[in-house]
Length: 467
Image (cartoon, rainbow, N blue to C red; front, side, top):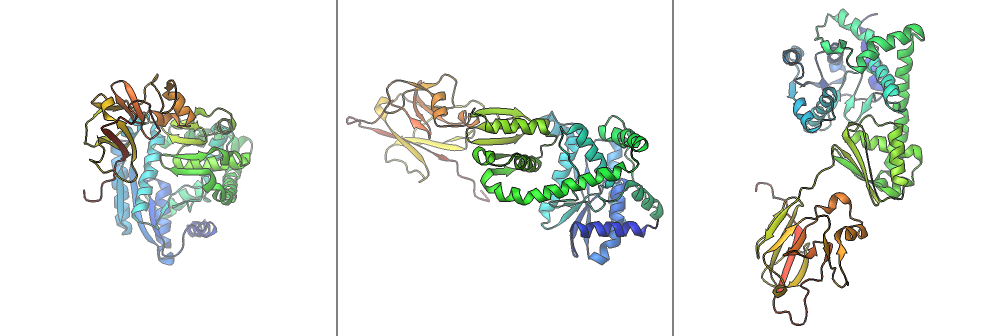
């Protein structure tokens, strides 16, 4: 086989999946291994024909000591030989895992690698990142998903967002032959031979055994399954986009929020496809049929408060009509307790709110402020502000008897994770106001009131640029 035929194959894949056109700005992710070195060499040969603006990016995970430093130096020299700009990002996998204990070193490296690549794209809007995954990678991923994915077939998409994979239809043996014909030098990662990792056991043991005993074309068939999954997801994407505004209220790298009723109205298959898209955007992987079934039961059940854990530290929480999807542990709400001096702003960092108490007419408040007025002569100073504690009770204005704050929160359908952030205004041990929710009967104004205390609360203003 002539090396030029691989160039033709790459060009055909680029055109088939519409990966990029003439004049494209491409950041080629190069690890130093054979796949990425061959990918870079092929793109350099296509550079003039496509008028490509190429640069090389390398992420140093720091997991292999001197070998990792050698990889970075090799890739920098390779970029210089091709006359291409070079950028390198060093990431702290150990530091990331210290705060994400559920994440393996390999998964942590993958997460930080993609974050670095996404950051480079953000710095150069309109650019694409070229990754060197090939057909054998696709086959291994499909088989791994069948073994570990709980019935969810997963593959490597040829294109997704800014990421493109022009070697995705090329078998590894063609890449190796091309490297030999072109006499390309590259780095070898010893960990790729370690049978400690599932992917390596699939690559070196399971796939060869299945090909030898059952089907010598197994890799090609598995890769085709991966491509079919990609085409199916694209088919569903149009439907997902049509319902997205009604179902998904928020979705970013930190988490997402879904409308329960809108989610319930979707078909079961569309629910799974939409959840797959949401989880992918958040970065939660390894969710299978068992988890999707549990999520559907959480959404359709009568209980307004339920939660469940997902692989990799993900968490799903239902609070009344909302479903929150979170990556990592649920944020904690530490206790706080502050003294509120008269006429002085108190910023409650735990809630992002500012509160002030003053005699009526002495202070002006923003139009967005929530304001309550009290009989100052019925109040014991100093006032205090704290968050909710189990067992808190008060007498709501206009009601007979006392009520648990917990019952008030339930009546108002306030999510559990928000309850401990709400400020509570007290005079001694008497609750005057559940700020922004309901005031109490204590110190209410009457015909004999002589001095009126105004208490206002509003969001802490964002600092202007340059402050």
